[in-house]
Length: 389
Ligand SMILES: Cc1ncc(COP(=O)(O)O)c(C=O)c1O
Image (cartoon, rainbow, N blue to C red; front, side, top):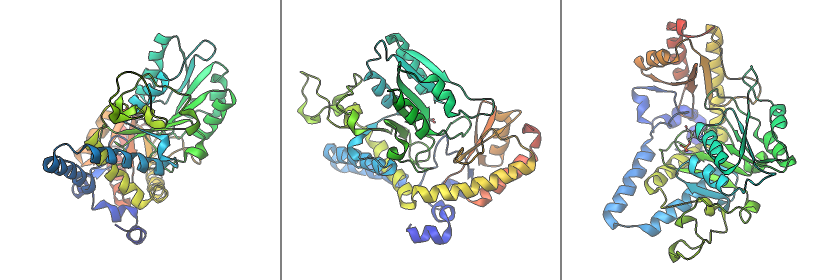
C-alpha cells in the first residue's frame, strides 16, 4: 500500500483488504484487540521460518527488538534510547515505581480514576512500602478537569499516573496539563497511552510527560506480550529500577552476576528475554500504522466517529463519552440498560463490540468504513430498548 493509495481510496477502503476478518464481520473492537492483518500473520510465519532454518537466531532477534524500540520511538516523537521494550504495561509501570524511593516527604502516588486496573493495583501495592495512594475522581459529567488534579497533587507527590484515553468511557484527558501540574509540584508524570497509541498522534515532548506507556494489542495492530515505555532522557541516570533483568544490563552478553550495572539508556527498564514472536508481530502492526500515518488515521476515524455520533443522537441514545473539542478519540461509549445483551445482539449480526460498566464500547480504526458505522447504528436501532435514554 502506498500513501497515494490511501489518499485516493480513503484509509479504510485501502487498508481493509489486509484484514481478513472484514470478509465476514464488522469489527469495532480495537479498544480490546486490533484486528489481525495479513502482515502480522506473515511476521509470525517469518519468525517460525527463521527458527526452523537457523535454530537460535539470537543476534537477529536482538536486532528485531531494537527495531521495535526504534519504531515505537518514531511513533511517539522520542529518541530510541528513551524507549524500554517490555512484555506489558504492567512490567513497565512496576519498573518505574521500583525506581522511586517513596521516602517520607515524597511518598504519594496520585492516580486518575480512569487508570487501567494494572496501574491502580501496582500503585496500591506500593502501600506495602509505605506509600499513600490518592485517587482523582471524575465529575458527574464524566470529565476530570485539571482542577481535580491540582487539588490532589502536592509536595508529597512522587508520581502522577494519568491515562491518555479512558478504556471505560473513551474520555481523552489533558495529559499535557496534568504533566505541567505534576512538574510544578516536583512530581513525575506517567501517561498510560495504550488506548491512544496508533489512533491519535502522541508527541512526548508536546505532552511533557516523564513516562509514556503503550502496548501493541490494540490500535498498534499486533498481539499480546509486547509493550513499550518512553522514559525522558534526563531521568535515566537518576532512576535505578530494582525490578530488572539481564536485558536491562549495560552489557547483556557479559553475563556478569557480580553486580547491578544497568544500561545507561531507558533499556534499564527492559527485563528478561525479549518477547521475540510478539516483536515480529509488533513491528508489522506498527509498520501498518506508520505506512498510513497516525495523523491520517486520526482524521479518518474522526469522520467515522462523527457519523456514528449523528446516528446515536438520532436514536436518542445516551452517550457516556464526553464530546467536547479534543475530549474523545476512537472509542465511543453508549449507556445501555443491559450492555452484555447488547454486545450479544450485535454479535448475532456479526458485529464485534465490547462493554465496560454500563457502557457499550464501539471503537473505530483505520480499517473501518462508513458502512460499518451504518451497520452498527441499524442494529442499535433494532434493539433500541437496550439503550438508555
Ligand atoms: C489503558 C490500558 N492500559 C493497560 C492495558 C494492559 O496492560 P498490560 O500490558 O499490563 O496487560 C490495557 C489493556 O487492556 C489498557 O487498555
